[in-house]
Image (cartoon, rainbow, N blue to C red; front, side):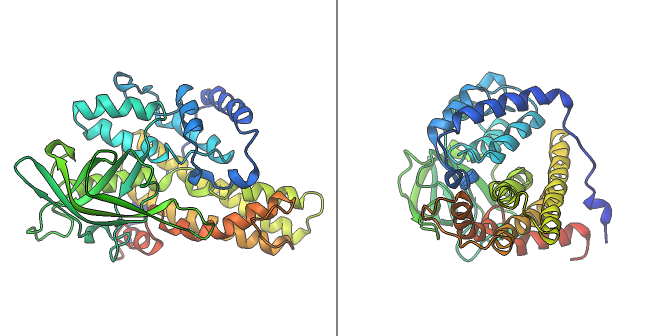
Length: 386
């Protein structure tokens, strides 16, 4: 077993970032006054384009993007501070989330000059909504098994296939999607390419929203039927899709969203138990706070490695796996410690509504960034035990 592959070097945020944290907190305190705890419990699934634009106007989106393309040339650690604060506050960041987290950096690294010039400034302004076309029916998180195909023609590409669990596809301006461009290769990971798709102009693409337990429709099934794209819609080099996707997933799997999606429930639970918690309840709350601190340290370690230009894909998978268990466990613990039924109805008790929302949302967290079974296979291979 190669345990050296699973090191999490300690990394702490520089103290000179505290003024930035204070500025973000002050902004959020003013902007989120009208948002109820129930709305805030949607966390990074919550969508409010106006809020995204306000965040962009403060320079807190596209922070790591080049200044030549509307970005701010700041560090990944500065962005980490902003992300941590907006998630802890339950800000509605879903409109810009994917664009800011991974699509913008991907385009900055691999996009054409025209793509950078037209798209990156919109991301930094909070005006571009992106979705990710990875998972497929009968393939799920096993991205090497994707069947959707892109065929080159004399003047472009023709795409056919289906993507599923595609968050925000029905409202997205753009999609970055993985398609098979070479079926002849013997390598399961070969012959895959990524495409940058303008969802507003491309024909033959149909998003179908999937309603979740709360009645909302953020997930989508997206069908591609002879959808035509120009030749320069390919992102990066043809055949490099697998390499590009695995690098992208390191950003997706390791951030503060992997332990802060249910943070408002934890704070509500502490508030409900204040001054009347039994020793047993205090012990359980203490254990969850310890989990939060541990996951934060692991996430910061990955952020430090990404900031240093390293590849922490294995560590990111561990953060996602453990973080998902932590977040999905919290609603059950809250029900155990507080004798109130979860509900979305206005009961006059914020805790009940927050719990009612997250009891229904938390099961879907397993879908985000790869299912746990796939992640454990990645971790096993990284450790040399598979």
